[in-house]
Image 1 (cartoon, rainbow, N blue to C red):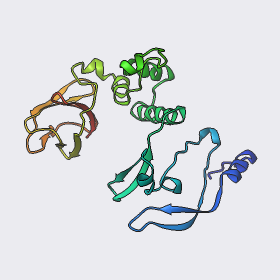
Image 2: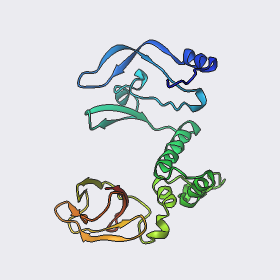
Image 3: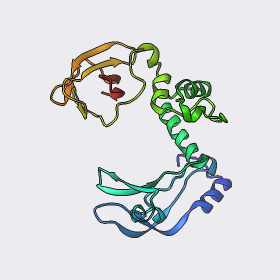
Image 4: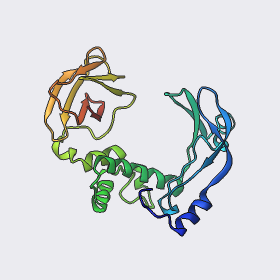
Amino acid sequence: MGGDVITAETQFYLKQLEVKNQKVMTRGSKARLREAKLFVVCKPEADVNAVNSYDESFNRTDADSKPDFNPFVVGAIDDHYCFASLSGTSMATPTAAGIIALWLEAKPDMTYDEMKEALAASAITDDFTNALPIRYGNGKIDAYGGLLHILGIPNSIPELSRHQPQNITFRIDGNRLAIAGAPEGTPIRVYTTAGILITDSALQDGGISLPATAAPGVYAVQVGNYGSTLIRK
């Protein structure tokens, strides 16, 4: 451990959190049960947990027996998992924490005050949030809108849509940006995060060409009137 000392307190936590000989469901071409040990190498206040595929109470048969459960497919392994739609702080807290973690990945030096500002500035309001009694603060959290805000894109690219397109996917292959789900001829504009327009073209054969001189980095893409997204080249 490079000279690190495991304190008695840490040893206590490890002892409490070790799960011995617990049967877990592994996923692969053939699902099977096998013996395993699970360790959590951190103190409880640093631990983030969620129900996952190892929890047999959330198995694929729940989708058939419980209307609130729906299976979704993980394409890489062509397997089905189940998830539930629930409400309450138990659901909201990890969702908000995950969104903010993604913001920190985009801007590691984001401060607490900047995070609060992004939450408030990008929040979505509607008839539901404004209904009396008003109890939703600034509104609903907007993960994409907040990401644009902390990157300063609303100022550098004011014409960029603040929402992502529905049912449209993107894939980078060298200097080609493949866009699936948008009609042929859809106008496509690509900007640097500083607001410099590098491509102004139309969708052809399911994609567009990016300039060979475009340096590796993050770019903003406007897809006609359908919305925008961020890509990494």
